[in-house]
Length: 129
Image (cartoon, rainbow, N blue to C red; front, side, top):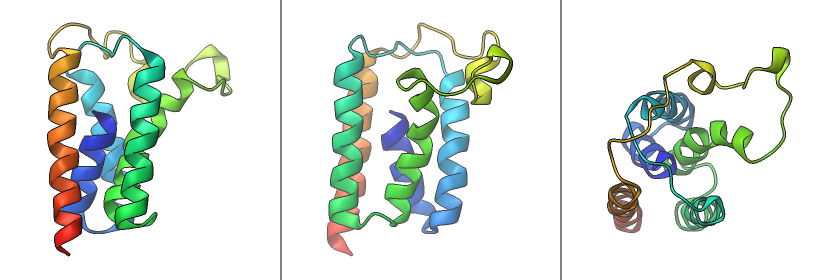
């Protein structure tokens, strides 16, 4: 969901710099919305990698939609890759605020459906340009 929302926002703002800022901001607030995490990290990682790859291939690696997607997804790299943790705390603010990331709410299936719809809209808009 982070990648799809970042891509959609990036496509709307039309500036790579703005897309990077909006993508990171969307990740921060997206963590606040109660939601279920996807059960399979492997599935989530490969969907994300594929989504960014297809965006880069169809719209270009520096297109605002691609930049927004990467910026929105990048904070979750600390869940997958061992990164430094100064003082033992995670790097991205929404990952270290107690109670910020709340379970429940939007199901993983609903998020996948919405992410697919957002990607479809971004890809369709990219093919029309």
